[in-house]
Length: 306
Image (tube, rainbow, N blue to C red; front, side, top):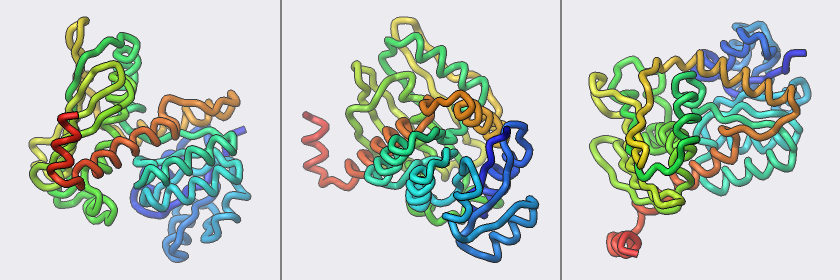
């Protein structure tokens, strides 16, 4: 029997990616949608021919799993409630906008015994998934550098340009999770974080990984369209390895994420390389970067020297 899904959210990403791919899936059944605005909820429900709810508990009573596409701080609260109700979770990045929020989601998932998967787009593209698996198996990497240079805030017709949380938190929180979702499984957990800012919302991270590797990661949503780039390369005794060419096909990646989550549930599994544990560790890095930037210069220098 197909896993019955409800979508939480009625915006562009919720409808064009989550709901559309759930409706097209052979592994899942889209049965409901929830939103805070009754008019938008009714319109989205009519578009997909499903039930619309403004009462979250009523929706949770009708589904096996939820796909959440709302701002990250709202997502954390909804995810805790859904996990407590025993519903499996397909989540967006970042998991939350604070480590406390991420921890609460991770604790609720563990307590509820539910499956969780965070949609780090790059991890569900076949070329990049194969590279992460192969590079992670090699190990013994000494360093790496990567970037996601995007143009959401410079592209005239971007559907994400008006997103309040993206405007407020910038590329660090919007794109940082994607780059970190490649770097952490290959280079290892992060133990030390330093950060610096650049043009627009550009952010540079210098990370110290467990085992001694280091990496530099850059993210921006304010580069010219002609300068956009996504990739990661690592180096060590085996030489260099870089992410292969790929097409950034968001809907195809979502379809694969849905397939993997439904397969987990069918197998009775709750662990996945992109579950809330990775999401929590990534939020910890992002919060540490913000903390570093907000520290007094003298404190920063002492931390770096130490």
